[in-house]
Amino acid sequence: LLTAMPVLSGSLVRVPLGIWTDKFGGRIVLAVLMAVTVPAIWLMAYATQFWHFLVIGLVLGLAGGSFSVGTPYVARWFPKSRQGLAMGIFGAGNAGAAVNKFVAPAILVAFGWTMVPKVYAAIMLGTLIVFWLGSASKPEHRVPADTRFVDQLALLKDPRVLKYCQYYSIVFGGYVALSLWMVQYYVGEYGLDIRVAALLAAAFSLPGGVLRAFGGWMSDKWGAHRVSWWVMWVSWICLFLLSYPSTSYTVQTTDGPTTFTLAHNVYSFTVLMFVLGIAWAVGKASVFKYVADDFPDNIGTVSGIVGLAGGLGGFVLPIMFGALLDWTGVRSTAFMLMYGVVWVSLIWMYWTEVRRTEVIGHQAPTLRTAG
Picture 1 (spheres, rainbow, N blue to C red):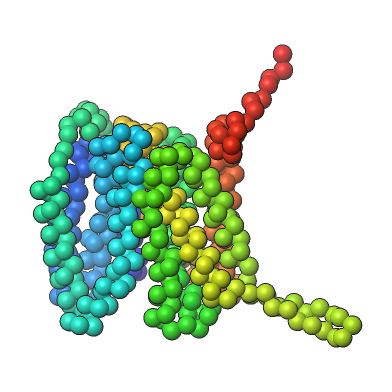
Picture 2: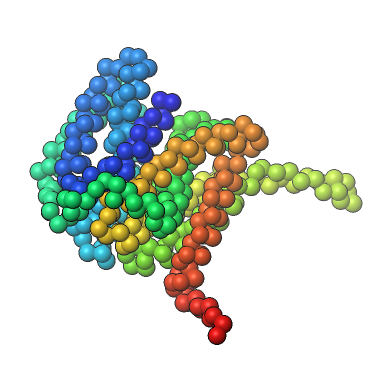
């Protein structure tokens, strides 16, 4: 419950934050959001009871919703041909989650755990000051003042929004879920020391943030449709290979029974996870390029809705991974589940996009009607 609380609150707040960004502008919303988290981070150093950490985690989770504020705020300063790269550079901040795995333990060992939140609170306060002094706002970046909250939520009825939610539940929700799951997987499947497991897990999580800017550049150059299509196919291949559990075969030969074992060693597994992490980094950028292209006047609202789907995916999927492991006793069922979800995306994308665009290299023929 404690670890899930920030993920849940950060997901649920994305929609209202996105709507407020469209209405009031990203500068003021992002500044207020950072200002709220500074005291919560600092107070963590003085928390002594479970409910203290629970409440603080709830507030800190609000920072997770900052993506639905920063994405539209950044995108509106750039022409459409450069919005993918701009949003990707902003999204590269996700790499902080991976960097934290190295920075926080170093501070903890040197000064004790209570120093970690104090240092992070100081960093957040400094970031807030620099942001406020170095940022600006434009009235034309906001929706009309008479736009109602209900009117913006009507975008939920658009099938494109639902489709992008499904895509993002994979490339972001799956990324968050597997980032939480990988250390446990390495320890349980390969018997690694937890420190080595954390280092190898970073091979998956680190590209997910750093390469997001590259994904934005690719989306600007080749389009969100084409990039997302190939991202899903790379994901499909990696997850298919990762889904196969360790298996032994016994074959009756003329010399007697011979046993073969088919399984990933730690090296092949890590390489596949690294490739998957790169694909999802690119995919996270391409999904938001869709949003900027299709909903230029409501980037904040749609980003919030799509971000909510991704955040809920990161919350629900680890629970499902654990349930499948308890039910089957097979750890690779986590990848089997993700493989099935990617199949849904590929089918959905084919019927709504590939047949109508040049994603596969040529224009699909249109059907002729009788008469």
